[in-house]
Image 1 (cartoon, rainbow, N blue to C red):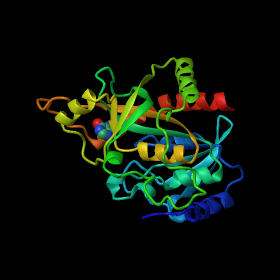
Image 2 (image 1 turned 90 degrees about the vertical axis):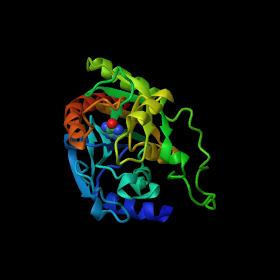
Image 3 (image 1 turned 135 degrees about the vertical axis):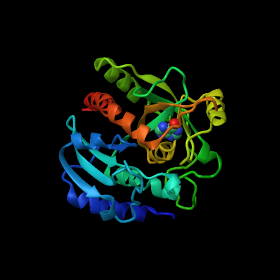
Image 4 (image 1 turned 90 degrees about the horizontal axis):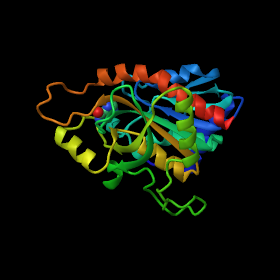
Length: 280
Ligand code: HPA
């Protein structure tokens, strides 16, 4: 499934017709974190099914709505629920709404996910600011920027990845965590396709190559946001410690991930709100 700019513009036009204020910030809420969207004031909630071209989430815990409203006085568009490669969608589909947010005028993307903690210092309920990532699907050709280079009106797709996670936004996130009296870890997010969780050998490997948290999302949306010229802030809510040993008798489960995500909502909300206040 490939899209052209015309598809994004058509979807944005449908959204624009229903809203009063153009969003300045786009947000994507990961597994179990979508309750943050309920904190918007003057919300306008648009089911994904009403947005032409938009794929619908098929995973429990991922409601499919674009909610547009104010948070800390800042106009935001929140993706309440995201789609994933493991649902069988293409990289272009799972990043569709990021393109739409950019068309609507969003200049910043705040992206969150639920992740396993590879770093042994991380425990369930902790928050990690993403300062870099490793994109495994991208290394094997699952990259949303793959496609024709014929449209020369488009920005170059040979994008640099050194300052992918915006430095001032990371500073603002640290300040927000400090104000909320919260610890904020920082590190490297590793993306795998999923949907299975990792083997212990994979966990040891991912730790060895410098990963601090592991999940099944985010990097695709980040790539598209960067290509669209948006600034990016990324955060992982650690829902479980990754299991390093085959002698460990408990498996990671989706239910455990959703339970821990509930604890993470107010914590991630405090950081997001602090960052938005710094932008207002
Ligand atoms: N691995 C991959 N993705 C995840 C995990 C995990 O342990 N926890 C939440 N999302």
